[in-house]
Structure formats: structure tokens, C-alpha cells
Image 1 (spheres, rainbow, N blue to C red):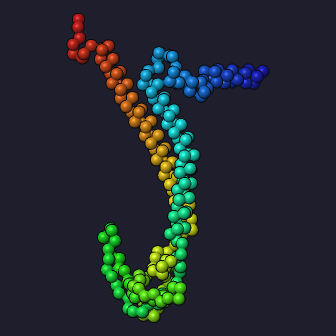
Image 2 (cartoon, rainbow, N blue to C red):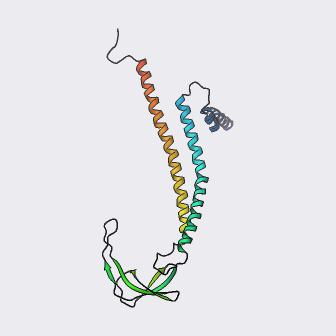
Image 3 (cartoon, rainbow, N blue to C red):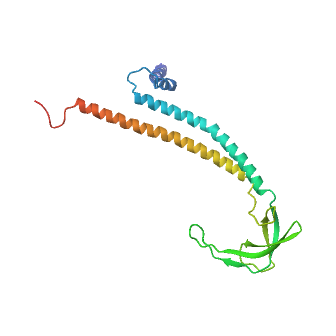
Length: 217
């Protein structure tokens, strides 16, 4: 019998707690901007509107950033394909001594460069030019070289996945910036409205209380 009474009491207390705590949907409905409740201040309504717009912006930013990332990927893929068209990997033969060229990067760190005259074959024609090499090497050494459609030295083709990485990076950048902008708008609005509310409460408090040091009999 005691167990039944205890179980019934726990069930009643649980029902009371559930009934006393409104559901999340009810709490959201109570803070709607058009709530006729006079206790809801204008600043409260403005803050709710800003939060709702921020939530919508956060949700909309997901498909928008995905679409922008897709467009960026497509453009990068076409650009890389055009840039790498006609590039060819050949073996160049050094025809002279390697020269060291002291140089410094943008951070002021000294990084020596090495150059040497070299020749290579392109479409049956022997081309001679000065190219960059990785370090001191003897004349007659063979070094790998990337050349363009005109036979002149060029940079190596883009790595596989470069276009995808660019598209993903662009989409993520747009998404993060959009979310940061939404969060900043909510924070700035809340800070400004809190300052206004606090200032108003302070004015009302001063009106309700007589100045300190001026007590009357």
C-alpha cells in the first residue's frame, strides 16, 4: 500500500511540474512581436524581431553558401583547365654552370636562388633559356621542367582537387561570415537595447526616490 501511495504522489508531482512549466512552443508564442501584452516593451519586440531575422539568415546562409561554393568550384575548374592546357613535362639539360642569386622573401629571410642555362626539345625544336634549378649541379645534368604550349618554362599544373578546395573554401567563408554577421547583429542589438533599458530604469528609480542627503522631516 505504501508503495502505491508513493508512486501516486510522484506521478501527481510530475504532472504538476509539467503543467507549471509551459512548452517551448508556448514560450515562443508569448514573446511574439505582436503580443498585445502591455508588459512587453517596444525594445523587447525589436529584440525578438532581430533574433528571428538572424535565425532566418543563419538557415538561409546554408543553401546560399553551398550554391556560391558550387559556382566557385565550376569557375575554378574552368580557369585551371585553361591555364594548364598545353603544359608539358620535359627533361632539360644544363649547358653551363649554376649561378647562385642571393634573394630575400617578403619577410626578410634570405633564400638563395639557383639558375643555369639549359636546353630542351619541344616539337622537334631545341630551345635554350635560363631556368631555375633546385641547387648546385654540374653542367650536363638533367633536370625536370614544365613548359607551356609555346615551349617556354612555366609553373607546374595545379594539383588534383585544387578546384574542389577553392569551391569548398569559398562556400565555408561565405557561411562563416554570414553566421558571424547574424551573431554580431543580435549581440549589438541586445547590447544597445540593454543599455537603453538600464538607463530608463535608472531614470525611473531616481524619480521614485528622493535624492540622498535631502531627507525631510
